[in-house]
Image (cartoon, each protein chain N blue to C red):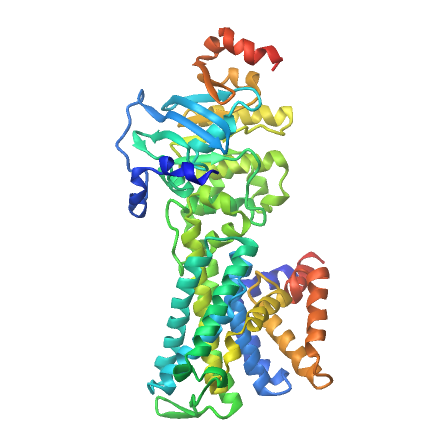
Length: 316
Length: 278
C-alpha cells in the first residue's frame, strides 16, 4: 500500500511537486521567502542534474545563476527588451557560458573538475565586476522593472508578492517537466551510467565526454533560468550572484535536500533559506548554524533530508 | 603512459572521428578472413615493455584463447585490442580497418564488446537497467524528451539477455547487490546487448566457484557459435577443452599459436608454462 502510494508519487513527480509548490507560500512566514525558495530550488535542481545524476561536482555554478541574471538584466535595462525575450536571453547566455566552461572543465575529473569550474567561475565574476558600464560593477545592475504584465488583456500586478510567486512558478513547473522528461529519457539513463562507472559507460559505446558536456550545458541553462527569474524578482542583479559562496549554496542545498532525488533540491533550498531566515533574527552568525546542520547531514544522513525520508518510507 | 611516445600511436584516421559510422555497416566478411589483426604491437609503460612486437590474427567465428603465465602481457594485450590503451607502436585492424588509437566508445560501436577482469557494472542500477542501457546504444544516445519506457524492444531485449545468462529472477535487483558470479554473468549480458561481432572476455571465471566456472564455460561455448570470441585466461586447462585456437604469450612476446593439441605438444610452451604445473 505504502509502496503503491510512493510509486504513484514518483510516477507523477511533476504533478506532486507542482501541487506542493502551489500551497507552499501559505506554509511560509512571508511570500518573499517562498519566492526565494522557488528560485534557489530551481538553481539547486539545475545543479543536481549535473551533481546528483551525472556525478560531476561543480564548484562554479554561481557563474550560470549570475550570467542568467545579468543576461536578462542587461537586455532589459540597456536595450529595453520585454520580459518574455529577456528571460530566454538570460537562459541562452548562461547556456553559452556553460558550453565554454564545460568544454574546458570536462577534461578533468573529481577534485580537479571542482577546482577548474571554481577558477573559471571566478574569471566570470571578475569580467562582470570590471565591465562596469554594462553591469554596474560593484553596485550591481539596477533598474530592472517588471511591475505589470499583460496576459491576453488581463493585467497582472507583479508588485503583489503572491502574484509574483505564481508567475515565477509557471517557469519552474515548465522546468520541472523538462527535467523529469530528461531523467526518464534514454539520455537520462546514460548520464546515470556515467555517474556509476565512466569506464563501463564508454565500453558500452557512449561518448562520455560529449554526454558530460550536454549535461553540463543543460544544467547551466536551468541555473541560468533561476538567475533570470531572480533578476526579475529582485529588480537588481547583485554582483555577489557570481560569488563563489553562491556556488557553495548550490552544493549545500543539493546535499541537504538529497542529491540525485527529484524533489530534494527544493527541500534543501527551503531548509537552507529557513535556517538563514530564522537564525538571522537571533544572531548574525547564522552561517554557524547552517554549517553545523550541513555537517550533521553529510556525516549522519548522507542521503539528505528528502533522500532519508524516501529511504525510510521504502525500507521501514 | 609516456606522452611523448604517443605520436607514433595516434593513427592517421583520427581526423575522421567526428564522422564515425553509427552501425557496423562494414562489407560482409569471408569466414576465413581474420576479423582482428595486430601488427607488431608494442606497449610500453615508461621503460617497462609490457608487450613486445606482438603480431597475431584472429579468425572469424572462432573461439580463441590467449594464455600465458602471470606477467605474460595478456591483460595488456586485451586492453590494446579492446580499446582501453592505444599501443605505443604497431597497428590494430578490425575487419580490415585500422582502428589503432580510436576512442573506447568507438570500439564498442564498431562491434567490439568486452567484459572486464575486475567486475564492472553500474552498481546502483537494476540488473535489467544495466543490460537495457547497454542495448540502448545501438538505437539512441542523445534523445532528451522521449520516455525510455516507450522503447519496448529494448526492454524485451534486455529481458531476453538476462534469461540467456540465467539472471531472470534477479531482474529488478540492484547490480551491486548481486553475487560475484552473477555480476560476471550480468557483464556478459551487457556485452552481448551491444550486438558485438567480436566479444572479448578477460578472465571471465576469475573468482568463481567450480560450478559457476562450468556454467560460464558452457555459456561461452554457446556464445562462440554465433560470433568471434577471444578469451584471456590464466588457467590453461580450463580453455583447452573449449577453444579452437590458442595463442601463448610469454614475457610480453608472442610465443606460439595453434590448436589445443599443437600447444599441448609444443616444447617451448611446456617449458615456460606447463612446467609450472598450471
